[in-house]
Amino acid sequence: PRSSTVTAELEGQPIGFAVIEVQALGRRFGPWPSPKVARLDAIAVAPRLHGVGVGVGLLAAAEDLARAKGAVVMRLMTATTNGNGRRLFASASYMRIYCVANCYANGDDAIEMFKPLVRVPRMAPRPRSP
Image: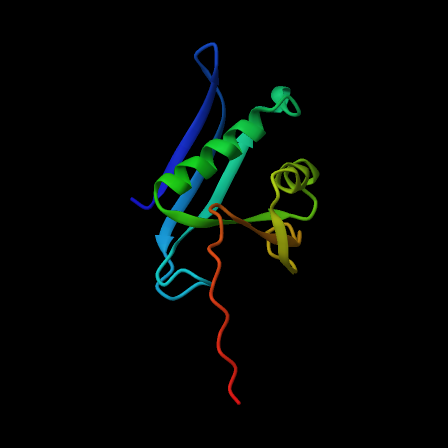
């Protein structure tokens, strides 16, 4: 399976999870000739534990897992109304790529976000044509 799940527990009880999918992009992406790209499909924390760092830890664990599977970037989508998620992703250096109108069944818009997971190698400048 291409999907993997990381979980968080407190005193033996589940308190959160994150699901990622890693796949080969199938084409060149920046300096990488054939990279793997990760997508955060879901992340959730028990409501009573919002704001205490569980989400930060889950996101870091998901990124580590994606790197271990060879991914060079992580993408995700979150609702514009998801303030907690947007703050979490912004604090972890995710960058907004674009907005998708009416993406969710309830009519909410979504924001696609992106973060490099590895240091971007320097590329040699291309020679200019005379």
